[in-house]
Picture (spheres, rainbow, N blue to C red):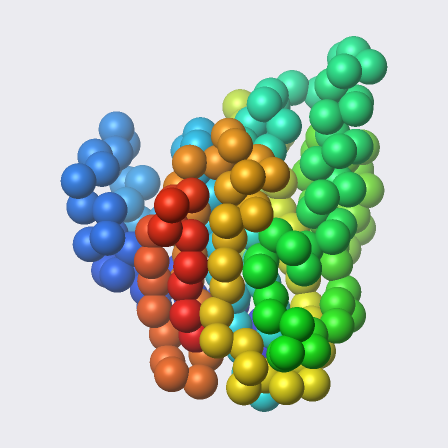
Length: 198
């Protein structure tokens, strides 16, 4: 399953690029990677294979917290705690249908702003570019990974991210990429167009 999620950004790059072709990047190389750090924009990859659903969400911390610096006040710490609480309860954020019977097997949150919690589980080949950004002190990102076991996967027709947009209003767009029984697709989601089907 991991190879499906890792292949998504490359397999669907033309789809996403076409969906957002009106958006011009300042740097000519940014179009080559969907993992670039852009405020207001998050990336979501999902793969449904058999009974297993995996979802990965990558976002600049400012989209979720309103800031990217280390917590230096009680208010900052409260915002971080609130964001963690919401990210640790993903069923609502992704609009999973109850009929699919999806039970959360694993949830992993990674960010330098989460006081290092979860970093021991990072896969170095996936996060090398993120570490370079953090070491340079330029950006702070949040990476969340979820794995579900779904008793009735046929009832899972897609994802509905309206609640995610509501919970994190700093997120303006989500570049969503999915692999499911009907193949793979990509779609640029916004609060008013927040659904993608498998």
